[in-house]
Length: 203
Image 1 (cartoon, one colour):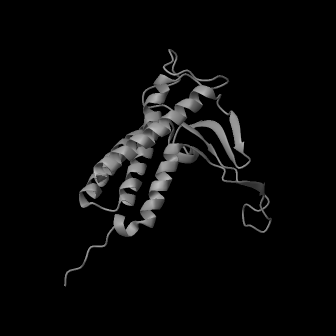
Image 2: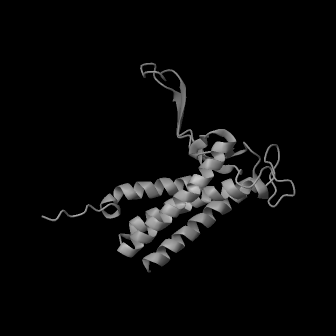
Image 3: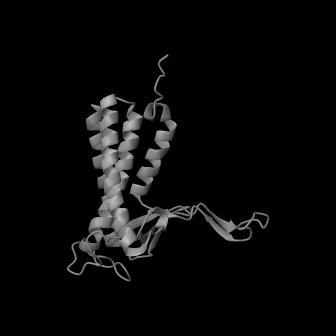
């Protein structure tokens, strides 16, 4: 398969998978509802206004800035992907960049459109294409659902600052788009020699 087609197929599959899972959770779960798959893996519906893992940035103005910044960033990622396709780099690098692009687009879709296509998820299941949307264009909330509380317990007292505190690993709730970005970054690190080749110095 041509590298261009490989990249396009990766992006399409990743974005569709991300959005299908998010829409399903949004239209079948009440905010905060949880479904246990295994003791260490749960589907837990939550939303965030800002960055990955629930971090927020500067309130309403910060959210708009973050969304606009993401739009600029994905333009750079597209150019980076195009250049690597032209260079005919290793398919793992093409796959990695395509995943990062897909993840960014997935969360951008939430941020831009979800506020005007869904109603609120508090105490009820949301409706798609609702007549009473919960927000505005560019002010949607990102849907998260994957929760992996692999270990929970009190930390030993000898650990500085957090010793004795109750701790959960892994405590953050994330979505497929976040996972695609993380996988893409990991692959770029593994295949860094292909992704960031050193230029030969002429003597």
